[in-house]
Length: 201
Image (cartoon, rainbow, N blue to C red; front, side, top):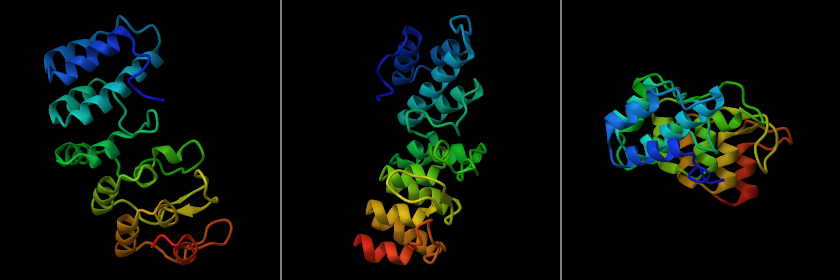
């Protein structure tokens, strides 16, 4: 689902203010809590606003949204702020998020519902190799294993996912940073087997 569809009037105002880089308007719109009847509505507005601010490449706007309570570790429509930031040409927003304490590892509990909050999995599955490289170089774990991920067995590692998706550069980078090529998934496949079986590397 496109995160730009089905917007409320307030969300459109916030989106437009971010597009115009109008910091005062963004701050005012986010501080006005009168329009939100439920906390869930506010969380959704902040989640959208954070991704818009990050996509804009503005550290100032990203900071404004964060100071108004946005949760950078919560995925929204399959996107994570730190992955979106990592994929930008300039790395200033990515570096800002890391400096402010956003975890490059995400949630420790990898599961069907939570693997979407693990930045490296999100980056690899999206084919976002620039973001994956920045996460790895920023020190994220390279030997995480998912309990479940689309099309792969339980216990698939970052390396399994990278090879299965054909993201060669990311797979090599994982290996260079210590990814365990012998780690097995629930079906007994390990990274070396995936390389041969998948034929991707």
